[in-house]
Length: 268
Image (cartoon, rainbow, N blue to C red; front, side, top):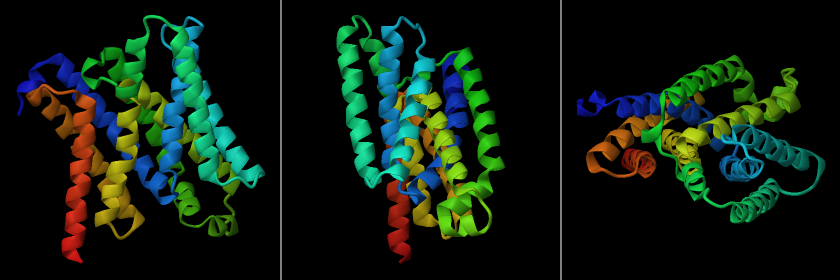
């Protein structure tokens, strides 16, 4: 089991996975409770348009345009939800399809960037470097600070927005803060994990946690534990089986979900 730890690339991959998975899993609890799974997927895929724009204007690392695009889409979605009578799912479907179309069109004009598209879609955690690992640590510290500093607000607006308002919480501000935090988590993780893996780490561990939890506190704890286990198991299995790391982590998440679902059914 400890053989992979002899290699520096595996050390970096495991550290990165263990840093990013709990943040994604923690945010995932609120994402599922607020029925925003499609929102995180929309943000993730909209980030492709930011990547394409960055490459089009000659940026070697299109992180800036990725962040700007993701935040813009997130704010537009919530602004339209508040100012129009459109259903949230309808707004997200419009943004999802529109931004994917923009990304594909821009990528069609770019030559020699197919590898970048594949990297942002599927990621390659085994290829992360020292700078990426440091970036993961900084992201972990930043997102942990924001989440735990505002955990009570996020919890109460997730549970009941009317109650939050009655308790003196600025619901609009809290909602936008949550959306920005979620967007930053997704957008900054995409570069290292890929869109597909970020989405699975956000949704699946949290969904598994709901199968074995009664309270929100339990969901938070189990989601983090399931996220950590899936990230570690998937990364190690990708080494031993010589398979892509992203799909292995995703399948590990789904296996955990299936096991918790079986446990829930047996308990009933």
